[in-house]
Image (cartoon, rainbow, N blue to C red; front, side, top):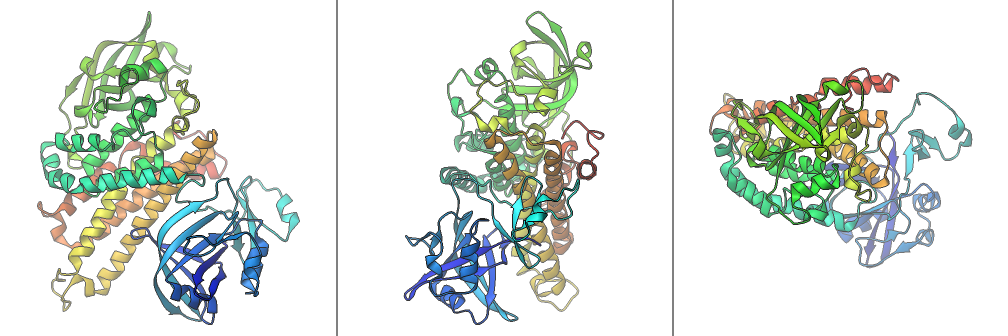
Length: 577
């Protein structure tokens, strides 16, 4: 497996120490723990452990001399490269791909190596894009992104080989897009913290939301006041205009308390993002011509189950749309329509914006999972929609948006990948909530009909919890990788090609499937009590089972799309890629 080459450094009373490592791994997201391995006799490792903290420098592809100096432990190794001491956990290497500062959490013997576990304190990336130096199959290599392959640094001919399908590929797990600014990360962390502060309120109302089939108004008011329902709204209208990764993390945090509230949070936010792609006049109508009306929310159903008939100045729209999640709390609705008169053109299907006051809501949401989302049915009977509130669906799918504000990167993001990926956010939070609950209860819950005093003592429980925790982490990693690629492409002004979008959809399907499987395992670990009405685990399970079957994130369809794309077969399954 290819790995990035890193130099781990620390500052000791005797001076700086450092060692090259080719095996640096994330072992946990909550808490954020990493581990690296080095020789048992390494004096540098001993210095790092004694110092209590360290800095991981991820080397760039042109820093092989630094790698060699630290690998051979030459006396003047810090003279090779541009090292900065400063107030860091250890010396930082100028020009590195990234730096990760950690506190030493633990260390232990691992065969002829010492494993050092660190808790991540902060991360930083280079201001401009840098490609990492890779260690693969005993050799240094560089990542050739143009061909999505590894090219060894010592074999120039390998860089020139041409293959339609490369034999060696690398799929870097990127937890954030490379050029995310410190300010953006600080805002994201602040928003997640705001969501965390709301968890007691949301948890207290979770049963009520489930029973009354709607998110309580206090939940919506708290989310609105905290800015958590304007994270994808343009800054021009008082929104925070963040990124897709932030949307995922906020939805995930909210879902730890209430799946239905997280789902509505997700849908209201992504509908703001859709509106940000409409012509300026439509945006101004929705959000008040520049005023910061944070109470204006937008719901939507994009499936073209209504019709639009062209008339002078616009269209007459009729139809019914469901499920319209969060419609009880929305002032506007986005509705999918078809135009029978425009069949075969780019305007054959579209999304239109309609005030909720011109629609009626039919109470149809009688389900067993995500009950609190008030995903009822909207009706329109010959409603007039002006032309500026009509947006071609094929244009949107292909990245041709109607907004005139070209400088706003968020609204250049890939349409279908965003639409699908945001739905993974609640799943991530539900899985984490299930894991937290089961682990906490296992410490004092007996394993009935066995000699074990608690579930935690039983190997069967330990193995199952480990498997579930790994699935939760894997789900997050897949979702965050897709978010990083979406955000990076939008920032760069590049619309991802078909194959990249297919992989993004696959990542979404994997994330949702693994989160759901983790919850199933945890319900089995917890036992029959999981399904008691007073146990939050049964609601988590119901919400996950229902939401994970949304048609846009179907794992089976996503797998088929991705598998065919890998084999050069494209566009035969669905337009929604």
